[in-house]
Image (cartoon, rainbow, N blue to C red; front, side):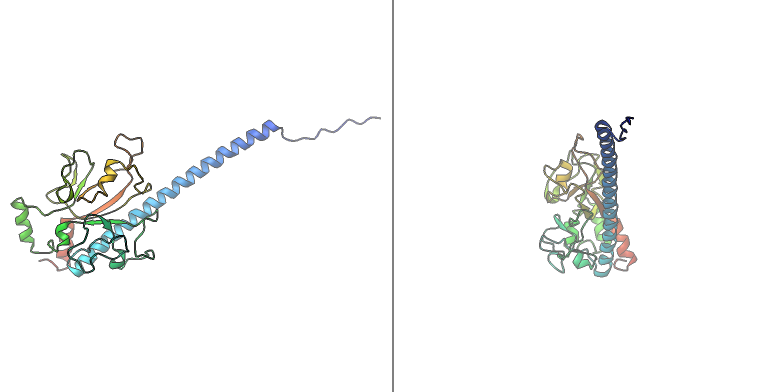
Length: 250
């Protein structure tokens, strides 16, 4: 008596292929989701670092009567140490080692979420130890139109004029006004690290002038180009308030 051959159950090649495709799609989605989550964590960590740095700068001003100079490429100490006339007020890094911040890398830099040094710029007037002077003298300068050389914080680099310490935001582009601008700005170059070719707005943040741009991120295909810098600043009024509360100003 002949026995019927038993059928061996299993998956066909087509079924295996479909299963692999589905698994790949699911894994790809998980990886994209994980990557996006990691990027958001880096952004949040960087924003926290910048706020901590801003408060530390205000504490330094209360203690020393001035803001520190930016650090250079050689490490996280201000140049020159002890200020007040900075070697490069508009283009440098946060002097985290001078500020006593931690943790820093082995060069004394405070690193953002992408392991790049936090950048920092200072008003030329602050660098020359002018802002902690008699506030009535400063108000008089504002009233007669000879305003201090505040940093200019703009919503876009479009329409900007001038360069160096004469750079100005375009009409309607001021965030920190020309009249009461910023005395210091600190920022991260964000996920792209200002990779070339940088957009005009990102270029403005590292062209060595007193003009800086801050706005919501834009993708590479945006009309104005990619922008992902993350910035905070110290306004003149915030600095004065802190100096008064610490007894540095009457």
